[in-house]
Length: 175
Image (cartoon, rainbow, N blue to C red):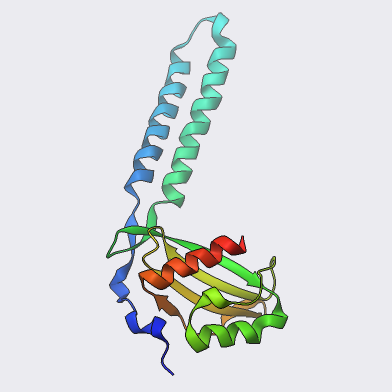
């Protein structure tokens, strides 16, 4: 029986990495303010402003370093190209005793809203969900932890808008 979720499988170009310009601008502002504060301390020569220059130096240096870390670590974001919406990644963990039930439900009809078990904290069964912020795209895969790594237990299932909204409701109810 062919799963309805696979019917609208997106192209590889539908999921893209894009330059995160909003993060780059805010990080650039942080770096600029930080450098300005540090350079301001270099122009202070009076003995009355030692504490103030120390505070400016520490704050400015911290801001500049934080801005550089943000620019390097969040340079790109994953987006769903047809809508331009950012894709977020979620992990739901389930008890190993329910692995067969989860696998059957996901492979049988692909409707994750009817998963009969509640998630638990870090275990050996993980449900990976990629969801666009506008809830028009979702990707789902069940994984099992073996030999110190999570291995895929099901195929990757792609869901269009209606099913993606149901998956979002599942995640909301499971938290």
